[in-house]
Every structure is written in C-alpha cells, then in structure tokens.
Length: 193
Ligand SMILES: Cc1cc2nc3c(=O)[nH]c(=O)nc-3n(C[C@H](O)[C@H](O)[C@H](O)COP(=O)(O)O)c2cc1C
Image 1 (cartoon, rainbow, N blue to C red):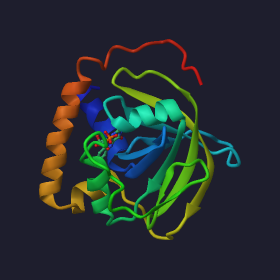
Image 2: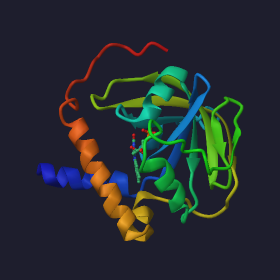
Image 3: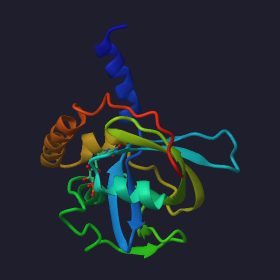
Image 4: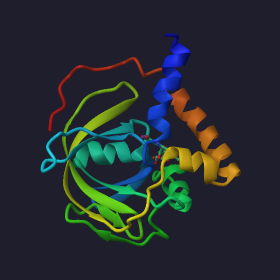
C-alpha cells in the first residue's frame, strides 16, 4: 500500500463523520467550534464514551483542556450557517454566540437550540497528539430532537455554498501550516485529570 492510498483510505473517516459543534465554558466565558473527529469508544451501552479530537490552535481547545467539560451537537443536514459561525472564525476575535439561541446545560456549557441532537460530556482522559489532543469523554446527558439524518462532512462539501467551501479550504491550509512544525512533537507525559 502506498502512502497516498493510505491517505485516501484515512479520508473515508473524514467524509462520513458527523459535523458537530462543540461548546464549552471556562471562567465565565463560553466558546464553540466545529469538529468532525468524534468517534464512539465504549462497547457498554449504559456507559457511553467518545473520543473527541481537538486541534491545539483552536481557542476551544484551552476551554476543554482546562474545564474538562463540553457539549457536542449534531446538526441537521442543512444547518450550514452554524458550521460557518462556529467553524470559520475563532472565538478570540468574535463572540460566536451573539446571534445564537442557546440555554445552559447541566454542566454549565451552552446547549444550542434547534440542532439535531446534543450530548453533555466530561473529559476522563487525554493524550498528546502533537498538533491536537484526543480527549476520552463520558456522555452524562443528552437529547435527540430530530428523527431525521445529521450532517456529515460529505454533506458539507456537496451542499454548502461553493464560496464557503473555498473559504474553508483556505483556512484549512493555514491550519496545516500551524500543524506541520508540531505534528511529530508528541509528549508521552500522562494527562492530569
Ligand atoms: C467542516 C469543518 C470541520 C472541522 N473539523 C475540525 C475538527 O475535526 N477538529 C478541530 O479541532 N477543528 C475542526 N474544524 C476547525 C474549527 O472548527 C475552527 O478552526 C474554528 O474556527 C475554531 O474556533 P475557535 O478558535 O474559536 O476554537 C473544522 C471546521 C470546519 C468548518
């Protein structure tokens, strides 16, 4: 198998992943970002766990790393506005909740109204991934609002406005420039919960 084939196969895990908005709260501040790196990680139905990959350059990373609390929202198939609002800008520059209806979850993190579904989560553990952190989280609560399908990354690329895709691709190139110098610097120090 060649590296490019390996990349293509790894890409399958991107394409069919749900597009989620992750929110968190730290020291009275709230923030949120888009992600496609949430995967199931428990075989025990009554003890639901996920692994959530968050890039270190994102403002939301420090919220989750320090507060150890987050909410994960699946989106309806056409909620591209939420992807733009939470995934194209950083909360360092903009109040992303200015025009968003939300309530406070049991864990104090924002719960966005009108989404497909959401889960409240607590970080159990984490490891260093160089440019990102995979967090192991437990799901403590949640609500399913819609019986329809949720948005996948493939939906975003196929149906979001083309100029938005171009804008996102440019942003992604900048993120890759951030990742390259640090992606191999993996610390094996244990995470302190
Ligand atoms: C479609 C899409 C998928 C994304 N997937 C991820 C992801 O899996 N992990 C991640 O950390 N960031 C991902 N991002 C990038 C963040 O959402 C983006 O960098 C955001 O602006 C970070 O905001 P913040 O700095 O306020 O945390 C994605 C963005 C989009 C639009």
